[in-house]
Image (cartoon, rainbow, N blue to C red; front, top):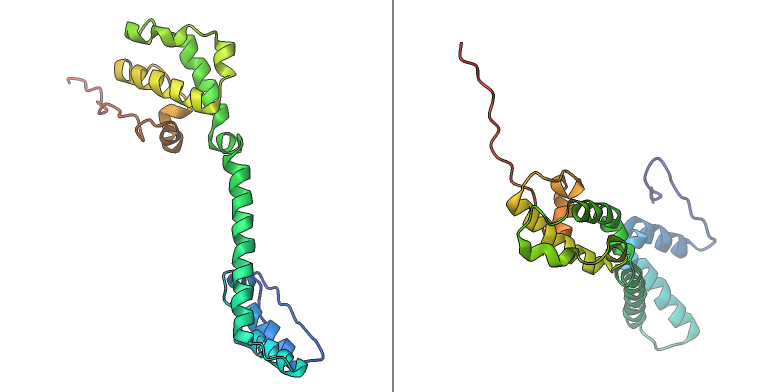
Length: 192
């Protein structure tokens, strides 16, 4: 049997005194351990478990054992997934990965530009001092920025040139349209 390969010119050889065990491990390596965690167990492993039960004089089923093993593997993978999601979504990590630094910079820019060039209705969003505004939650900052930037783009489309002006995923993260619509480019023609 050909030994399994693991990427860039790496080959792993597994030797035991038991031919069946070598065959089972090699067979599972060919299926891959990722697929093992997904519930794809080599029939050679199930065969070895059946031989073990027979040697023990047990009436247990190797197929039932495999089914229980798959359920336990799925539970482990699910617990890992839940832990990852808790770390990512129940903390400020997602905001940091998504662009919180760019958001803080752009909120500062918008605040500095002020509301003078915007309709008066937006003036109430500038009463809080900038230092206090920047201490608010990411959710609050995203809402504030979405409101102010949407108004600014509606009244002065090119007043600000920052990451949120050109980066589609950042704009989507905030809730802005994917890209700022630019006017058609006009070449300066000379009459000759």
